[in-house]
Image 1 (cartoon, rainbow, N blue to C red):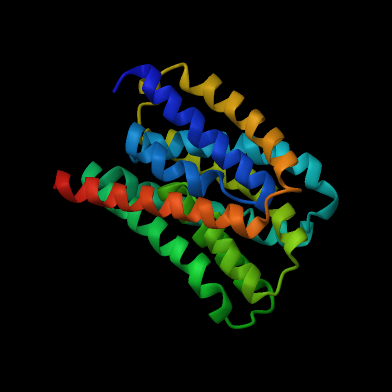
Image 2: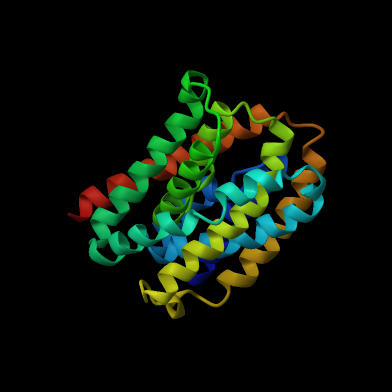
Length: 249
């Protein structure tokens, strides 16, 4: 694959993910992770997503700051490192083929839970469910680039008000992205020098344009419509990663 085609794919995925996240509160990881894992590899691709998702969420955090639930943030955010550590061990000790299968499978499971399982989640109270969601989110973000589904399940169980939940996700995504990338970088899990230089400016420009577009589309496109499109695309990407991993065994 030529560098320009690669950059184009990354640009489109980052643009769509940032646009969706501006509309619905999450989407950068769900949409970009399976695509990046396919074109950049399951380790490097997810690490690039970790960086871009953290920057994207930081920008969104500024505009959503008045709705952030800081009490829940401090319950969920700091414990993400507890999930990232065992995830790094798996990343270092699994073959690329099996890692692609694991990344794709985790994404499919997460997307299935978010799509079909939310209404079946029992009511949860107290700090323990919040802390648990943070640990699981840290693990999933380090392996597959998606922390949102684990926290979404907790949000449904805790009957967390949607606007506050979507706003609080943004600083949580900053933490999960930084923690996941730093853990893998310190463990020397991948050679980031292999990432084409143009990927970074392309991803950043795409995110800015995606956020701008999402801000204007949010008044015209319902959250459910945007979410359904993203979940469909992400599921196809996740299944492609599984198939690619199986064929590589």
